[in-house]
Amino acid sequence: QLQLVESGGGLVQPGGSLRLSCVASGFSLDSYAVGWFRQAPGKEREGVSCIRSSDGSTVYANSVKGRFVISRDNNKNTMYLQMNSLETEDTAVYYCAANVDCVGPPHTWSHPRIHWGQGTQVTVSS
Image 1 (tube, helix red, strand yellow):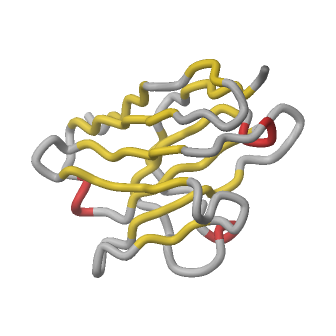
Image 2 (image 1 turned 120 degrees about the vertical axis):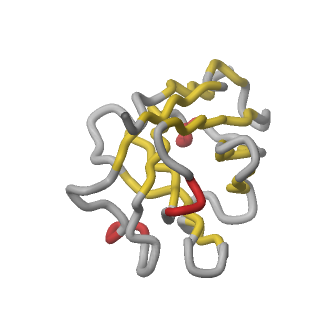
């Protein structure tokens, strides 16, 4: 059974950092393009970052470029999202995903055959 389980969310002050983790089971993460999405209250889910399966290159949404870093540890079958210089606008539920269409811009990454985690809440507030 394919499963993705996120952890690492929480409450952090503006300017702070968090690292999200996503452990996969039932399949190998390196078999897919993987990524992180987020959904803020009242907004649609949006792509944040992804790793291409072809060459391991990474892509970031403009809103997080230079602040977030996506990575993957194939030995642990785990992916990460290091989030630095957090802003109140980063407040959202964050989802990890496998089988992402990590080719074009972030709004094209999602499709019906994605495998989703359950989400973890990140709140940036003073």
